[in-house]
Length: 150
Image (cartoon, rainbow, N blue to C red; front, side, top):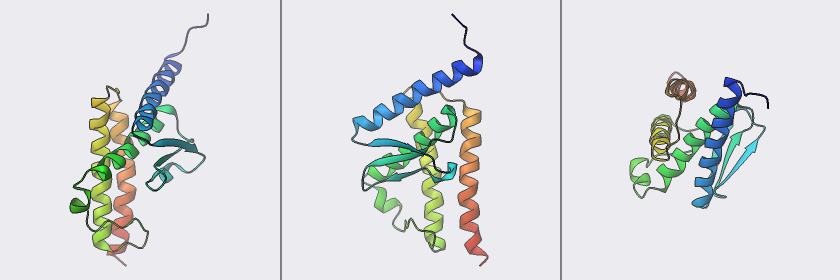
């Protein structure tokens, strides 16, 4: 039998962790769909209780994306959500206050994702997770800042 390479072992590990996270979603009544969308377009459909993630990432980054989207589900299911984010508006035309709320929720979703992974005993590569988190958050920060100078 052919031995697996280090990369193949990692891919297999992250696929198992992805399956674990998907099983959690299913246990709370949510579905997860993979679509051929751009990396930054993964999102949560709160109406249909469906998390849509891109199929265009390797398993490790797909896991981190899913954890982040689960972070949104957990944040918004909390009874304090409306009080903490009274100005949230999920549109590209959001005003400055709404954009700041969006950035706040994005940061919170990443932090919640990290804590959720720990609770579920999903081991992550902290360095890669932080790099993915930073890249995603910077896109939101740039989006929020663009309006400030218009």
